[in-house]
Length: 317
Image 1 (cartoon, rainbow, N blue to C red):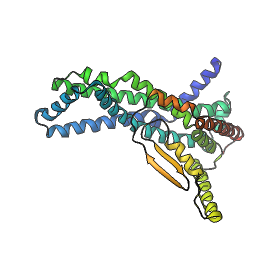
Image 2: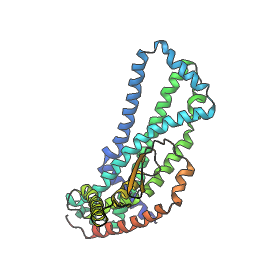
Image 3: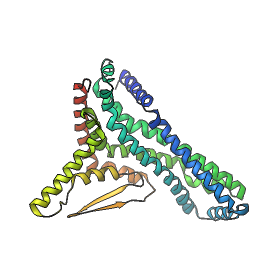
Image 4: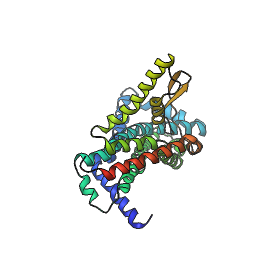
């Protein structure tokens, strides 16, 4: 990849950031501000029932007296639970963004302007995908880091009041470099895991006459209903494999905390909500060895090729 290609990609990413400032920049900062506001409000309300911080001081002393592993579990678990809120909202933003990314250019006819520039359609599609896989996660991770630091600073203030060492009680057990690096790695691998879903949305956005998000949902939902109906008519049983639930499993499962696990068991499907708040390097990197990961990437490559093909032949939509 030469310097001109990198420059064009950087310009296209800046365009995406310029066109979606609320979703990309202000949404993660707003989430962090709301979390901090809720924490401060809860502390103020709790202070009215905690005379001279007796209960809070006792809790902080008990935490400081816990073994190192226990403190690490509690502190990092609390920080991970905060990040899980960001992850879920980030996923929704990415899905809606991708579903309209190529459609909006055709809807407002700005596609004519962008096609007049020395930027290929493949580069345009790649910039949309890079925004979803790299730009948005980077901005959300920045907001997560700022929020976690502010929460630790608030905890530090209470630790000083209670006479507890905040370094050994909060900052060292938090293991921030490891916490942030595993979250970054998790976001990148999660993007690869969801690549077929992202590519499907881009594909629908490249040709849908209107409401691409509904079309992207309606097609797999319609196939799933037709599959159920055919199986009931032909064999009076429910299918053990369901196309719609397969896509839902791909979308809901993965590396990031608070995922949804859907298992197929004969004629029944079970849905379980995972409450795991932790990731580690082994779990994250383990997804790269799964056959489902590479099959999904092959499907994504075909869908991205098709999206580029439709983009190349689009005029004014």
